[in-house]
Image (cartoon, rainbow, N blue to C red; front, top):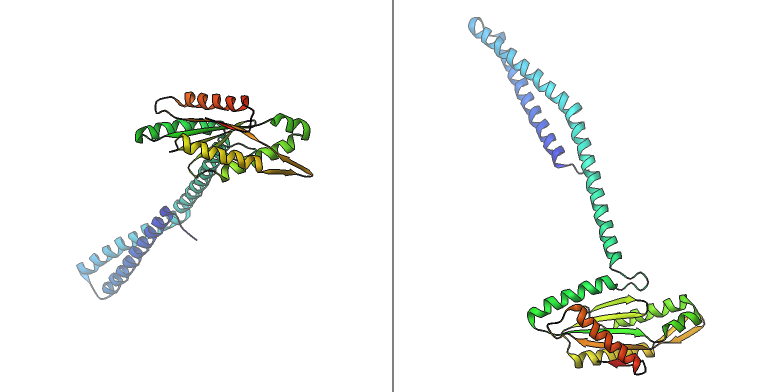
Length: 262
């Protein structure tokens, strides 16, 4: 059983009082012994000393009684209340972190959501501006995804979204930001990539999505994606960079879908 610091301090205090009581008791016995063999002024002095020692023993016994039966229970109650408060604080802190994580996570795919993406993109631009390195942005949109939902149902559509999310996570680096923006639209923030590197990565991902069979019961589907790319120019805002990538996504769809436009 582990004791609180205040309890340990109380026990030390009790031990000290007990030690003082033992010393007083020994001194009292010694005074009584000398009193039996003394007379006159010495005897009176020893009686006075014995009286003081007896009074000290009474005070020590009273302190022990109040300490054990009144003070320690109060300390114990405070320790328990403090323990409950700490446990409640830890629980609330964990719940707060869980809620914060939930607020930044897409419930369907388990990847980051639009709120997280917006904050991360702004932070990446701010940090990479200091070191003068590029930041690439890819926006993916699944082609004709509405037909998947209309033909096979939303459950199958959800399976497709989860499969695509898994593909994006598997093909990106640990420090890339991969997020579902909403619906069938995804985005990747790829720091330290110029347009050539970004295009190669986007093509690999697009090809992987197109070759990925999605099974849901007896239904076997293949989906394609259109991709818009933009590399930060070092000056524009996060919104401006996103609009440029989004314009390239529109261009990819306009040119026939299942392609990358940069």
